[in-house]
Structure formats: C-alpha cells, structure tokens
Length: 490
RNA sequence: GGGGGCAUAACUCAGUUGGUAGAGUAGUUGGCUUUUAACCAAUAAGUCCCAGGUUCGAGCCCUGGUGCCCUCACCA
Image 1 (cartoon, rainbow, N blue to C red):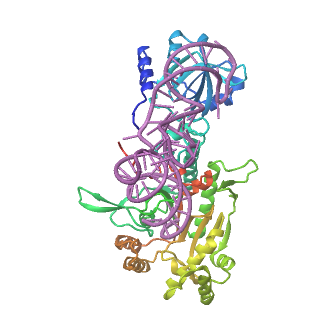
Image 2: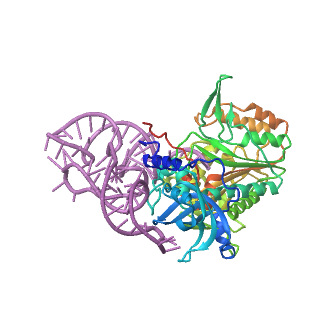
C-alpha cells in the first residue's frame, strides 16, 4: 500500500471540518434501531420516525437527492436524503460523503415511488470518516482469497454472507455450551503454556519465559489437565480452547485451532456418543440447519448430510470387513489386502500389526464414511489411553465420529490404571518418533495414582464442525484470522 | 517439506508474435428529485510482486526469491 490514506478522502475530511463538523464524534445516537428490524416491521411502522447507524455501502446520487444503502450488522436499509428534507448545513455534508463512511440518519419510514421501503433522512451526520476506499467491484467485492483473509475487516463488511457465517460460528459455540451446561458441566480453563506437553501426538510450538529463563511449549491438547480435574472431583468439565500444532497448513489445518474436550466421571464412551450427538444437533440448530419440517441437514462440498438424530453406528470390525473384504484379525488376508493397496508389509508385533490394519482402515474405509456416523470399538493395540472391552480385550472402548468425510471427534472410556498409564507414557518417550512427547508427565501419573474414577472423555474439532455446518470448504473460511505469512513491508 | 498454478490501477480483470499500459467499478469535477450494478460528460490514477539475466527493446522469454491457491506428505 503506497498510501496510508486516500488523498481525495483527506480532502473530503478537510471539507467536512471546514463545515464545522467533527469527523470522529464520541457519541452515537442512543436510540438507533437495526435495519432488519425496521424492514420487518415496516408495514405497521410506516410514517414513524426512526434512527439508523451504519456504513454507506452503496450510493445512487442525484443533484438534490441521494439514495444510500446503509448497512449495519443486521442487514441493509435504503436511506433517502433529499434537499427538501434537510437543513442547508446537512445537505452540504452530503458532498463530503463517500462510500464506506459511517453515518447516522433520522427520519420517517416511507416507501419510495418505486415501493422500496426506506428511511427518509431529515437529519444525518457522519459518525466516522473512512480514509480508504472500500472494494469497488460491484459484482465480486473483495474476492482475492489472500486479501480477504489478510483484511478480514474489509471482507466482513464488503462481502455479503461473510459476517453471517462468523456469527453462525458464534451461535454454534453458544449452542454447544448450552448443551454442556444443561448436563451440569463446568467450563474450565487450563494452561496454554506448559513445561511438558502431551495428550496427543503432534509437534509443539516452543517459547521461552524470560524471568524464569525456561523453555515452554504451547499445548497440543487439553486432555491431561482436564483429567487431573476429574481426579480432584470436578466430575463434569469441558474446555473450549485453542491448541497449537507445529505442522503443515492446508484447507483442513491451521497451526492454531479450536478444540473442545470434555470429561465425565462415572461415565463411559457410550455416554460420550450421546453427548456428541446432542452437541452436534445443538450446534446445527443454532447454525440454522433445521428445516421447517424438523429435519436437520447441511450441505458441505456439494453433498447433503442428514443430521437428524439418531446418528448411525458401525463397528470398526464390521466396517473393515465390508470395505476391505476380510476380518481385521485375519493376518493372512490383511497382509494380502495391504499388498493390493500398495502398502509395505507390516513389522513384527501386535502394535505393528494393528497399526497396519488401521492403515488399511484409514485408506479404504474412512473415505467411505460420509457421516454422521460413529465408528465403535477400535483395536486395543493402537489405543494406549483407552480401556479395553471387558468381554473382548482385543478391542478398546473407543469411537471416532465422522461427518462430512472428516474425523470430527474421538472418544474413550479413559484409561485410569496408573501403572499401565505410566508404562504407556514411558513407551512413548522411548519411541524415536520426533513428534512423541519427549518427557514423561510424572505429575499426571501421580494424579492417576490418587485415583481417577471411571471416566468418559471426548475431543471434538470445532473448526471442522463449523465448516460442515456452515458449508465452508476451507478452514480458512471459518477462522476470522487464519495464519498468514507476514505481509511484505515497504 | 515435495509437485503444479497464479501475481498488471484502490477492487475485479483484459493485455495478440517481445515493440514501451487497457476496461468496468471505485475516486475527482460538472449535470440530474425516485434510484437500487442509476445515468450522461470530463478527468486523474501503474515500481506490470521483487532481484538479476537474454534482447536494439521485456508485462510477455530465462534464473533466483517472496506471497497466495491447488495437490501430496504430516496431522485434527
């Protein structure tokens, strides 16, 4: 940007001040009404005087008459400013008005000769003078994806539907919180800065505390602090919060993203499935996905998804059988299937075998899971933090929830045996994988040793849920400020 | 991180075979009292992403860099 401010607008600003007006007054009218409310009540309120405030989004000018599209958060209303209705002083201000300025107008509600519901301004004032031009293209507005993300403030006011999409995100969060509160969950906040990270396999961001002269990690998951709270007797807790993973960026990945995790004492993964269903339905209703007939649907990536409960369930084992064509425990058949799918042969040991089964599952089964669907009971060997099924220890009490072709949630009957937990954490650290945690969280083991009741826990990716419910293909479109490399400065 | 694509006025985009920069909108000025992509006339506006190279001459060709998009990998 070569100019911080548009020279022509600085001239208009000077002209406005020449007329004796404050271009940035501190006070706005305290009786302003929203455009959408006025239009909704227009029939009954015709002739009444009202006050609106908002941004000038369009202007069709005549010598002594101007039609202005005034936009506020609720929508748009046409304001008619004509010389006959205005003081000479107010009419003079009209010549200093630009698109993008923020104004207020007061006057009667009245239809134009063409029948357009309008507010006829008898008084008006500039509340904020804009010093840059809004996007000029009338069809496309601001369409460059980079500019839209970098200048979200412009995208929000200039492009129809963008603001509504983010307000729907806000409504989704509210809807989910209501479900938690309805079930007696307490919302908690746990540390973002941690000296040991854990709860997932992911590369962390690192930072440094100056006064303590110590390295710190930004959390990659919410899990471990929340389980400590369960130990302490906070029996139903949830946290909606930002987590940070130092990995690739894509249409589905941002370095920081929002997760909700919740834990419920004396519950198991069945209870978590009920919660997921209720949360997703609650969020969908808040997002406006419910039709008049009661059905709840959303369209995502040109595909319609029916979110009307109950959600389908499928056993991991059955889904594997259906799409891979063999039982996951049939070692010879799995080896053959891996060969067909182009995988290398599996390594030695139970973990390697079941990992190889899961590779096939992710490659051949997951793409078929449109959702909403719960995939129940994962191989125990690949679920170190999960209780095994009592009647069938090969399988673990874990489900993943799929929607829109993406994994949205992951839940367990949480492992609470401190000795097994310690062993698993030590294995992880011994593992050469650079993304595994590099230190055992002994304090977490100590917490479990004091006794954590049987607990159901679940994590759900909020950004992806918002994508599906608002029909946005890219995570960037549901993040107000997605990660961007710095703009080159002059 | 790998591969591919894009980058021209404030916005959205043209730009032919390499011959020295265009449109619409927005802006400015003037006209206009019922428009809604208002209209009419005039007018200003460009480091053609950056740095090199080839060439008599580069928006266009070549090399390197930057940013964004798509895709693969990693993940949620």
